[in-house]
Length: 591
Image (cartoon, rainbow, N blue to C red):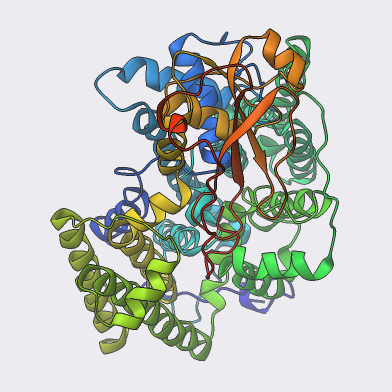
């Protein structure tokens, strides 16, 4: 009986012609178009991005101990300590030649590049396993194992780039990106376990401590248990022997967390969601994991007889742990981030079984959807630059009233180049018939990269003013002399960072009542309130100004001065409340 007739044979039928690899230059261009936009020319964005940057910056300046990072006395409530060490070390090494915000962003961009590389190699090793190989064809001509694995790995990387959930979170300097790196390291270590290489051993051993040190100890141990199960059930002696490195990684992760607890940093604290709704979680899954989740589901159906084999079981278990974590935390999208490389690996194994009609549907949907999105971005850009169409310009500028729109010829050149490449890619895909496995993911990945590139070039000034604290600090600075200590009770770390980084203030985020703030010697008090709430009354303090972020539902910041103190600067002439109108429009909730 031939292998193709076995009841549990591989469902993959792949010819050598279909196993052609994506040209390396094209693959590198895809990665560069995704990684580089948003790296330069922007501020840290609220809320998690600037909060994490503040912890890193305080370490680099020596304002906080490297063992106990804090901003204004407020310690991080999550995130472990490793991400802040990474950013703080980068700022220290590159100062004063590189702007601190950019310096902190560089190592995290390298981490995202590492996630891409680890995803490719993990899928490559999984596709090289015996159970993942395509069945021999009756008259020969089946794909060679190495070529088949390369084509599948190319598809996995394109699927990861096409994932919508990675766009913003993958470009932030937050602990979640370090957690993503750790989860992908574990996927690679387990995929390459059969080779017994030193890289596989190091990846498996270090993956779990990396996750635990970046604020996800419980998930790291759950992933360790999943990896241990795969090792124990493997039919390969090399994979079964790999369990000792999994157990070592779990022990290191547990020891690291115990050490963090001894330093007073977050340890085994469990974050839960208070608003658990099945509909909201389903909606999150729909857009966050598009298009990898539908393709992964297709893989599970076609490969259902091999679900216990390592090339399916390991990425599936990682995805299930991430999904359970997201659900337990009430639909937290950041908890779902670690599932994307594993889902991309699963999605890649759907490509050998993908029907031609479904592939064509993916192509035409991508062409229509991303072309329309790119056209809308160009329309908004032309409108705000020229004022025509007038109605479009008015609607766009309503999103951030008072925004200053500049013109960058460099940004325009890159946007035109990216649009030209997209049009060429569409013509290439629709004008010729390609047999490559990865062909159906070229347009989704290219469309996501194009829209991100256009947004980070053409609309970056508008977004930066909507999501940065810089303009807010410029408006409140006339009311607060920089020579005085500023108290900000219950203020988020992002706002404390903004006052230190943009305003140059010394801040205290711990004092929380009027008497203690006066004893601390605070000259000004900054209180953040809900946009529809009334400013609180502080005995002994006088409200002098009130501002918002210029976007709808952004928080209000109220500034108080001592009753018996002199009000300096602008407040001498305008001692009354100044309240700016809140902008209405589609940016609702952007902050």
